[in-house]
Structure formats: structure tokens, C-alpha cells
Image 1 (cartoon, rainbow, N blue to C red):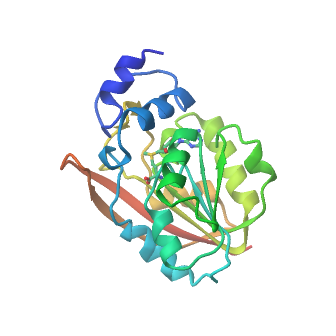
Image 2 (cartoon, helix red, strand yellow):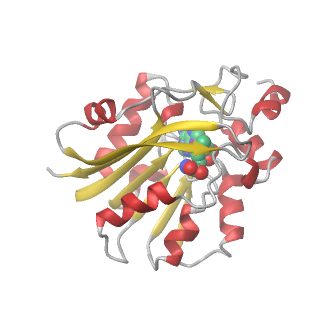
Length: 227
Ligand SMILES: C[S@@+](CC[C@H](N)C(=O)[O-])C[C@H]1O[C@@H](n2cnc3c(N)ncnc32)[C@H](O)[C@@H]1O
């Protein structure tokens, strides 16, 4: 892999592809080592769209909340503030998870798991969850076999009456992020991938403004596992 190309484009949710190796752990380790997480093209000071959907779930404070591809997201800090006691952050990048745990001073209510969603080992064995939250991870999986692995894991891990929040670039959005090609989604496509056991509860488009000032168009969705 050409690391210099990745580094030059790693913080941007745009630009031409700089690597043909998708989901490469080294890519993400480089991104989180090279840049402060607040500079990254997906940094949110206040993850309000996610929090609004989480509120709709009316989860108990001891509900198991899994944030996949969490990176160093501030959503974890907000969930701690909201007094949730069973938060799990998982990511392929150990560096990202270190940035996160350092920031939250290894809060006892947060567990981290380093694993690859396209080849899960630890995640396969983990407990079932009340909430699966994914902002901007699934869309990196452009190969169908990786999407299948992802949805298989999600379906097997979300409890009956549990929820999945999926927030991805929509069809008006960018076609690349962090120098990697992405797959765009809308609520209908996500519903098809989840199948009949998951019912769409809420969806909206959201324009996210990157630290650079550029705009990115996301679709947010909330699904409930009904059968
Ligand atoms: C665009 S960032 C989004 C981070 C976070 N969800 C947020 O909204 O701030 C994508 C994240 O997915 C992680 N990631 C990429 N491929 C992955 C994989 N195969 N398995 C697990 N995490 C992955 C990256 O390390 C990175 O933290």
C-alpha cells in the first residue's frame, strides 16, 4: 500500500481513491495516528442526529449499546453523560480505540473491542445487544461478501425488540471518504439488506459539515427488530 497517498488524503471524506485495498487495518491506523481525531472528515462535536434517534428507542440505562466502527467518536462521551452503563465501542483501529479510551479516562461503563466487521472473530462471540449504531462504516464495504458478513453479524446480535441505527452517505452524497470508494445508501436499500425482521421506525437526510467546511449528505435510519 502507498502510505504517503493515504496520509495525504486520509482526513478528507473525498478525493480520488488512494488505495485499492479496502478495509485495510493499516489505512485506519495511519489515519488515527497522523491526525487528531477532531481534524478528521467525520468528526462531530455533537452527534445530535444519532442522539435524537437513540432517544426514540427509550432504552434502559443498562441496555447494551454497541457502536460499530466507533473510531474516537464523541457519541460515547454523550452516552456516558446520559448515564448509560453498558457501552461497547468496536473498531478495526486499535489506535482509534486508544484515543477514545484516553479521552474518557477508561470509563468503567465503556468496553472496547478491536475487530474487523468484514471478518469478525471477537464480535461473533459477544453478547446480544439492544442497540447497534453505525455512522459511516458500512458504506466502506463495497464488496457484497463484506456487506453480507456485516448484515449477518448485525442480525444475529440485535435482540428481539432491539434497534439498529445506520447512518450512511446518501445518493446525493460523496462517492469517496478517507480516499476510499464508498457505497451510497437510502432507507429503502438498508431495509432490503436488513430483511423483514427489521421495521423502519424513522429516517431523515442530514447534511453534515466537515471540519474543513465542506458538506456531506447522510441518510439516518432507525430500525426495530420486530421478529
Ligand atoms: C468514517 S469513520 C467513522 C467513525 C465513527 N463512526 C464516527 O462517526 O465518528 C469509519 C470508521 O470505521 C472503521 N472501520 C473501517 N473499516 C472497518 C472494519 N472492517 N471493521 C471495523 N471498523 C472499521 C475505521 O477505523 C473508522 O474508525
